[in-house]
Image 1: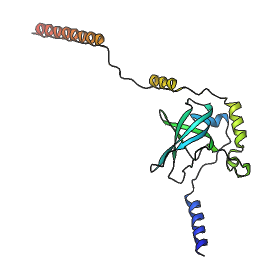
Image 2: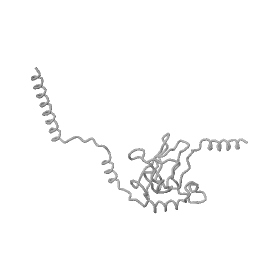
Image 3: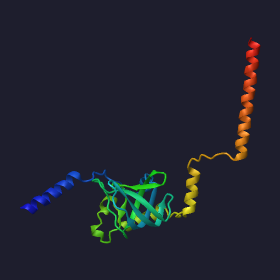
Image 4: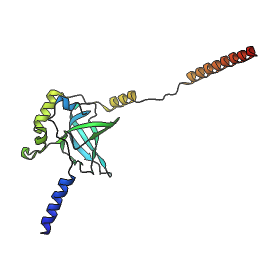
Length: 199
């Protein structure tokens, strides 16, 4: 009797607190536009949950959309009813978005899916209407396999995109000071002459 109550309570809690996701459309070129980076990769490691979120580290095997290095970290929810679970060596197709300039995030209610060897147990097929292999082939044919950038290339792109406050060189600083001083002297003499003539 006690076990039955515990099982019923657990099932009730899962129903009440389960993540409520809107229905997903099968992945298409239009659906892929809602994501910044799409890739197929293997998990290298997973950080411990820091109250709300954690990082999962992937090695990208195939990049279908966006700009990314081969080794990439993705932030995910690890504490709410919409938390995700990742383990080392799992293979995933990841659909991620940028929340900051260089921080990718993946959410439970997305097209992100894990490779499950037993096709009958692959519950992702129900929502995506494609098996893992079918979805991977679709991405390869429709989006193509993109070039994975090298670290120094990505760093250069970041430098170009970030706002930079650069100080002028020594010569330019002196030139600016001289021009400013000259302008102030001109204003001084004009106002002095104006007030003299006004009297």
